[in-house]
Every structure is written in C-alpha cells, then in structure tokens.
Image (cartoon, rainbow, N blue to C red):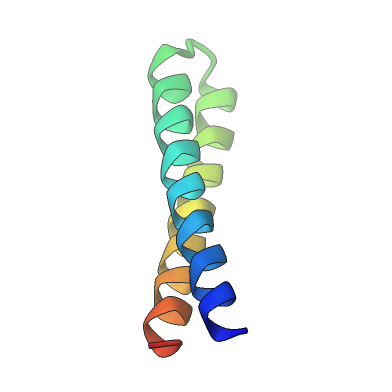
Amino acid sequence: MIDNLKTEATRAIRAGEKLQDHYRRMETQSDNPRVRAVLHDLLLMEEMNEVLLRSINERLG
C-alpha cells in the first residue's frame, strides 16, 4: 500500500510540474492583467501542492 502511495505521489508531483509550466507559459502569453493575476494565483496553488506532495512522499520513506 505504501509503495502505491509513493508511486501516486511521484506521479502527482510530475503532473503538477507540467501544469506549472503550462501556467507560466500562459501567463507570459496573456495580455490581460486579470488573466495573468488568476494564472499567477493558480501557479502559487500548484507550487504549494507540490510542497505538500513532496512532504508526503518523504514521510512515506
């Protein structure tokens, strides 16, 4: 069970990294300041999620 959780956490971390890259690209391409602000907030949320997932992964061993 723990191995499965570690695998899923690692997959989620990789998916989150890809999502962060997409948000960054979208943010730089947008001309609308409101859209950029929302993308910035989404990026921060994903970064926080990554920190939590890495912590979980570390505690699982």
